[in-house]
Image: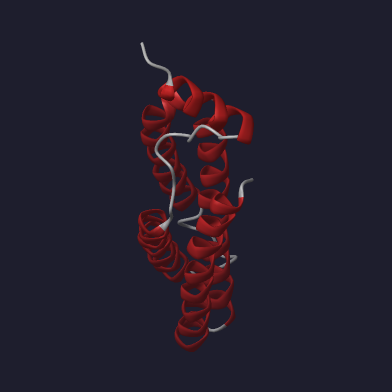
Length: 149
């Protein structure tokens, strides 16, 4: 993964982890042990799902750039669908408190999306790959530009 992609991943995951820690504290205060487990599961699920999606999307951008926008839309729709499926599967669980889990999931998802949007906007990403210029290449260009036609 190029350094720019890693930077975006870190700038998205760290705020999400902080929000997850706050959700764990709130879950512990409100619902005790089940609240803690629900908040941890929700935050970790978002970090794992969104991080994997970002990694796959960056791979697509490098290997199949003409499909990047369509794959990005499909990736986000798939992620939202997986979040809904995960909530539906665990809505009646006794392992953790489902409302704390759902609120942690929602807060973590919104944080990830906002942090990723901010990190992407602040990234200095080239829209076009610049041509590398070498000493020989630059001399050839100068020589051809000085010749009269």
